[in-house]
Image (cartoon, rainbow, N blue to C red; front, side, top):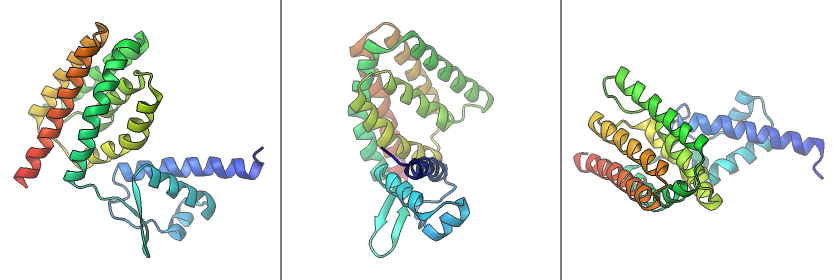
Length: 222
């Protein structure tokens, strides 16, 4: 049975993990930054025990990397790494979409429609600029959650989800790709409503492939 002290440390560890994770993803803590335990302990008014646990959790999320003789540093994502992530997404998220077509609830469908409406509203008011990172990522997150497959949910939402968000905050895509992505999201919702597993899988796969190809074009231009 956990002691009150251990329970408090677990709560503090979870809180500081969330705080640091969001700061890293949004760029408030820059890529390559060394996570100084004394500095962070002072800044967040927390003891070193929960802080070390938080850093270990961030390592498991692949947001922080331990460098020998230097300590923990925030990862720096480069485009080849992002391409690797998108190859993994292509395989796993397409399967998640197929499972979602079978398992998604009416509430899940309504959440997707709401997220799509938010994206459409944002694009209408921004002249076609890229869909807000939170809205677009949460659309995929909702599809994955609706798959009902706990292993897929863990792999995508716990391990890749924050890396993808980190990349999206650091980059912007061209408006024409945003318009195409919006159409593909609409098509996916239709496939989910029709409970068409093969169609949902195909649409999600093509959606992610096109996004990856867009990133590859960036690499060629750089």
